[in-house]
Image (cartoon, rainbow, N blue to C red; front, side, top):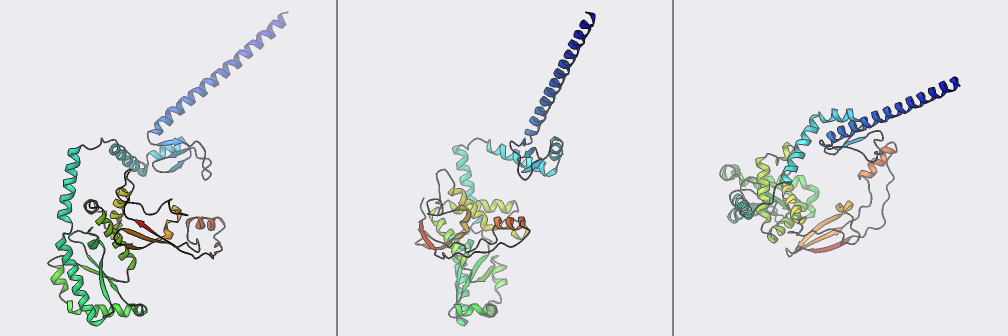
Length: 363
């Protein structure tokens, strides 16, 4: 009987010990989970989150930094990432963006003050009607000289001077139009062009020294001239466009980010950004010309749509030219790498038909 009691007692102790171990393990696991939650809450402040579903490219990585778009393997790697300069810089920019978005809407008085400041800046920095006439006169005088030697050629003003997005110090962009018979001898033609301008031997002292005007001459720059006509028509359609573009460009100049030669943004890009902003308002200020309302339109193939003209300053004329080959597109480059760099076979489409359209400038 005593032996039975001893066995029962031992069994009870063993069961109790096992239950204690399980309880201790459960407590330790709960403590670890609590610690992990606290750690992850700390990581959330740095916009590092646990991925709900592992990425196929990074199957063993548990976290993702949303401000840096970087996958991170574990908590240790996350803390290491937080200390990196890139992450600190991105976090500072994210905080600034959050603070700006949290600003209250401007009052009516503030809007009037901003409006007055923008208009005054445009008046001081932008070209006036008189400035435009002076630039057009320079081009006309140059054309007279050219025509005495090459009667079939002509000059046309394009760029910011024509769109009125120019500063008083902006260059004068001039394009030379010439007959097709000259195109094969373009270099000889440009040499002759320079020779023709020999009568302007004092151009640097007359214009550069006094007015700061510099002429930049190109030949057959049809795309730039067409784009200029488009932007000029938009400026006529919406009077607020010119002062807004000038204000944006002036801000970029003050921040020294508009110098393309130093890795900055081309000046015309600021005009395009302002136009895009005005197109994307909840109540659009400027119209969008391409979209889902065009049969077969695909935003991934927007480069197949080409501007071909401006009609009566009221309509945009465009043409859809489907590409005959997808060579050079990103998806094909990736496929080539996956297949060991072999060049994919090019297939030419038999459908060479082009589609044309006419879209109104008005929203």
